[in-house]
Image (tube, rainbow, N blue to C red; front, side):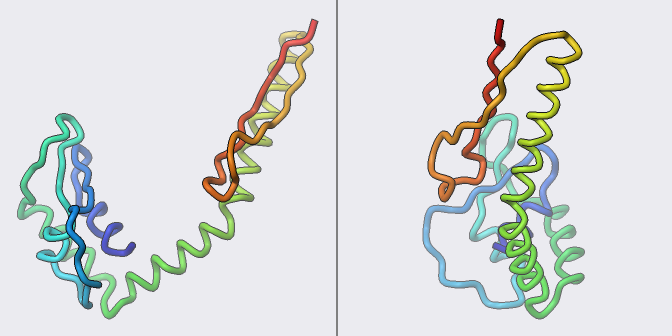
Amino acid sequence: MYMRALAEAILNSTEFVKPRKSQFPVASYPIDFFEIKRRFQLLSKESGESVEWQPSHEKMFFEISTMYTDKEGSMLVEGLTCLQAAMQKLCENVVLFDRLCFLKEAAENQKLTVQVRYETLFDEKISPRCQVLFAEKLF
C-alpha cells in the first residue's frame, strides 16, 4: 500500500500508474526507485499509452523517501488506512445527510413538496457508497 502511494505521489498530473501483471515477492525496506519501476507501469492519462519513467520521477522519489525512513512511511500508511476505515462510514453518512437537507431546502425555496429517502443499492460490505438518495416530487 505504501509503495502504491509512493508511486502515485511522484507522478505528473498527466500520468497514472497501474501494477504490472506479474507477481513479485514482498518488497524489502528501504524501497528503491528500481522497485517502483519494476512493480508499476507508468501510463499517460491522455492516451492510456505506456510512458517511460523520467529522472524527474526519480528525483521526486528520493525527496519523498528521505522524509520517511526505516518503515516509517508504511507505518504511517497503515495508521491512516485504519483511521479512514474507522471514519469512512460516518463521513459518508454526513455527506448523504447534507445532500438530503439541501434537497429539502431547495424544494422549500421553490415551494415544492418532495419526499426524500435513501435506498441501499447493494451490500454495504462491498462499498460504503452503496446508498442513493431518491427525491420524488409530490403534487
